Image (cartoon, rainbow, N blue to C red; front, side, top):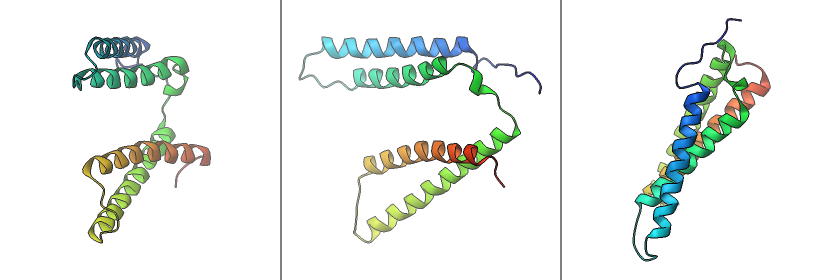
Length: 140
């Protein structure tokens, strides 16, 4: 197997930089929350905390796991693509179901609720389908 060359976005240095940026964003957001009065509306600091937490969580997980999971070949790409396409199709069907539930007056969610449902469904189902296909071995 040919040796994989790490690109600039897959290197350990880039992941470390993203982890540090995440820590900085998290600390700036928490500091801003502590310094503001309790009744002052501020969404900027909450955004800093959210983005910082996500960066720390993702980059920290990649740093903790190491680079052993970064090897890609035709099989892993094929399984990844199939898992994503199954996730997309499931999301499409759920969106279709939400439309009919709203149209028939059974369940009428707000746009924020629909967005959260679809975002979580797409992310979680993609990982579940990819995990299932990796356990299965291959796709047909």
